[in-house]
Image (cartoon, rainbow, N blue to C red):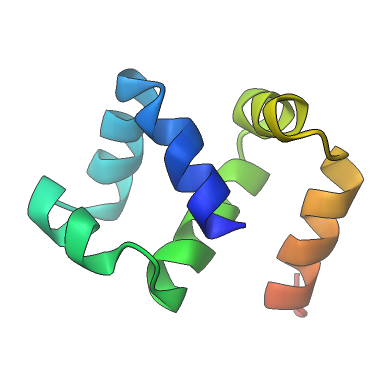
Length: 79
């Protein structure tokens, strides 16, 4: 799921820049972190908190927002 999120951000440079600013990732650090659990969780959290991005991701990948949020809930059992 994190890979799908990263691809979605790569298609929207302004959102990618915002994510990088919020998380402190440099372009090089982001490339090195790609595919790792930490980045994947961060991306999933970022999309879960941004309804417009979440809806675009779901529409572009043919899954429901509820399915995405179930993944998020499994990663964040305390909510």
